[in-house]
Structure formats: C-alpha cells, structure tokens
Image (tube, rainbow, N blue to C red; front, side):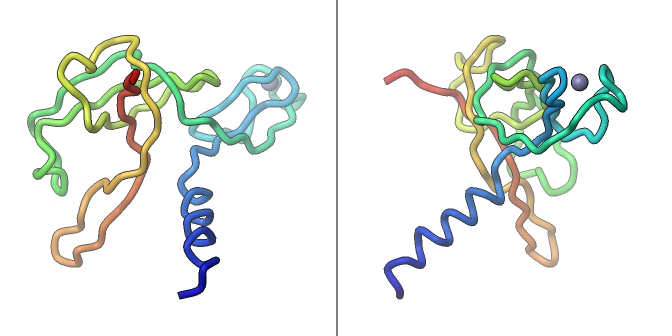
Length: 136
Ligand SMILES: [Zn+2]
C-alpha cells in the first residue's frame, strides 16, 4: 500500500460527506438543504455553496419505536430537529446518546453513519447523523 493512499481516501470521504448547503451572499442567510433562490432577496440574491461546521443544538426531538422498513434494527431511535450554528435547521437521527443527553438545547455534532441496508441487495446507505458533544 502506498503511504499516501490512506489520507487521500480519507480526504475524499470527508469531502463527500460534509454538510454542504448554500448561502445568499446578499443577506448572508444560510440554507440547508441547499436552495437556489433566496426567499428574501429573490432575483437580487447571489447564491453560493457553503460548507457547514456540523455543530448545532437540539431544538426538539422524538423517539421512534415503530421503524420504517430498513430501520428495524435501530428501534427505538431518536429523531431530532437540529439547528446548525450557521442557522439552518434539519431533521436528523441522533446516535450514541445517553438518555439524559436527549434534551432540548443539547449540543451535537455531525457524524457519518450507516443509514439503512437494502434487504436483499445488502446495499448500505450512509448519511449524516448527529451525536451529543460531551465535555471531557
Ligand atoms: Zn438573501
């Protein structure tokens, strides 16, 4: 194995899974999921790509006991609305949490995990989830 291959692969992996949205450069509003049009500036808005740090706080959460197909192994799991530091809110799964960490205002960070497996083909899908930030 070439010494340079591992960091190279990791860099590509990280880029692929960053949280990338958009920003309206005119009014500095951030969008995630990315938007092509700023609802405030309309045609006066200049939209560009924006990478988010992946840090945020839980706005609200719920525990899901009945899972859709493909998620059966993960029941019960926690779904939360997380507000990113940059402003946008997204719905996401919370993983690796202790019961007392599942609360409004909890600081969380993005992590990339297996989302679900397609039964027969065994195709594994990855995506962004969030995990509590622990002070140590
Ligand atoms: Zn705007």
